[in-house]
Length: 351
Image (cartoon, rainbow, N blue to C red; front, side, top):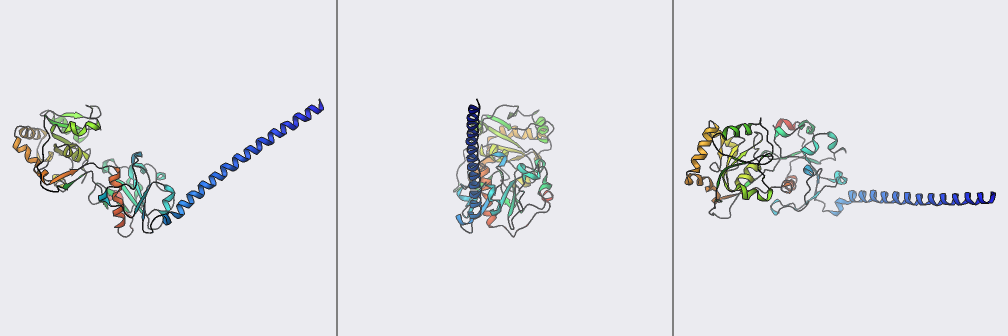
């Protein structure tokens, strides 16, 4: 029995030794892998300037806007990003010439902003397409931002929802066949908002077909086909601010071949971007009833209605903007950027 006990103890010790050796090998392998990964990151961080041309601007996308990813370094030709390199790799933060901060992704906590000290002469680009009414915590950005990028024409980087481009030659625009009168697509139905209250008065005198959440469905692939059947489209903005003219005008109305009926900034503001005879403004009428009478009058006067399309012989709308379109603007702006600055009170400007 004594001999058998010693044999069992030796076997147990041997098994434990094997287990310890295996654990040691696993731990060593993990350490070696982690060390190699850290070295690899350090190598890419330290040598990024050697891999790129010395004068190449590195642009760091700090967060994907609302989590939407898109191809980097594949910009439209007209943006000309030669001499720039876009990356979403935060390990390159200290090498970046500019960091693009999408406001709605970083505005709820200072911890969402870069926590490492900013390198000298690095530009922080503030990007936002929301109106001031829907842009919280602007004070987070005080004394941090170097360049602004938004729909505002006085931004350092003007990035509108759409714009007009000249036709290569004068051409006759064919108005899409019209079988319906007025459409409105709205995703955020707020009964207390100015635009919903105005609609409720307007619909007493004029039939309006409504699409969107809580209303008729409007599939993305049927968007233009559906809206193009209407003579008019209610391009009502969710809030009234200078230059805040969104896809409601550019895509829903103009791209679909409808006459936009706009509720937003002043007529003078709209006329900075589109011809004065291309739209109907609610401010031109004393009441919603007067506007309804004018729309019904145009519905019965084809010649007068067609006058809202005469500008189409010279110009056409570009309304297919996406995240890529906006971010691609940063390269040219950065290469032409003035001496480094910091905006002390962003909210004082963005209002």
